[in-house]
Amino acid sequence: MKRSVMYLCLTTAAVLIFVAPGYSFAEDKARAPQPSAKSEDRITHEVRHELLMLPYYGVFDNLVYKVEGSTVTLMGQVTRPTLKSDAGNVVKDIEGVEKVDNQIQVLPLSPMDDRSRLALYRAIYNHAGLDRYALQAVPPIHIIVQNGNVTLEGVVATQTDKDLAGMRANGVSGIFSVVNNLRVEK
Image (cartoon, rainbow, N blue to C red; front, top):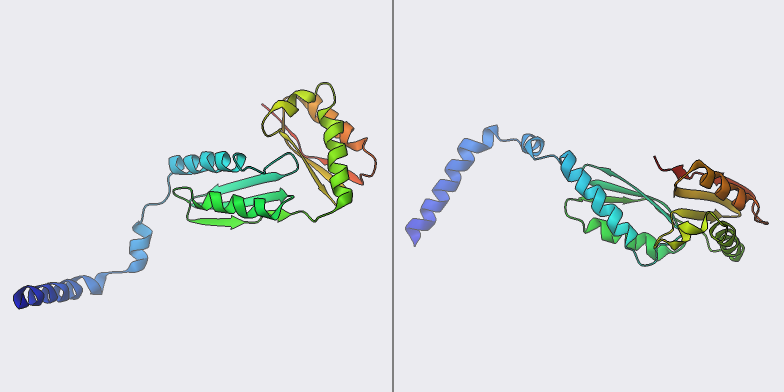
């Protein structure tokens, strides 16, 4: 027993003497494998899936993300504080994600904004031509209302749909401004 302990100590000392002088933790970190483009694509796909599967993510929320290596930055606006924390929690559990920067803005509580959200939803999604977007699990036109100012986010099929959604939003009373950030599918 004493012999094996002594052998282990001598072996460890020899390794430290021969390895320690030339060993650098910075070099070891530089040699560590960096996330590949394939890994980043997988993370991007999984982040999108996890965010879309959040139970309270809806038409009045806008979640945007950016993947850089193993770091995911979450951005956007939500109406519920729990949605912000839920988004951060599901993303940090994805394999390969080492850091989550949660910059999601929680919109202030406002009964006036809540009334405007409902009026905007009806104006946009009840209109012939735009009503087909309401049939999806998470409708692609997101209506963000903050202090009476409206931003439309998401993706629509045609430029006509984008313009129509903007006109319908501008027609709702009690709205101060409308910013139409809808993107048209290619």
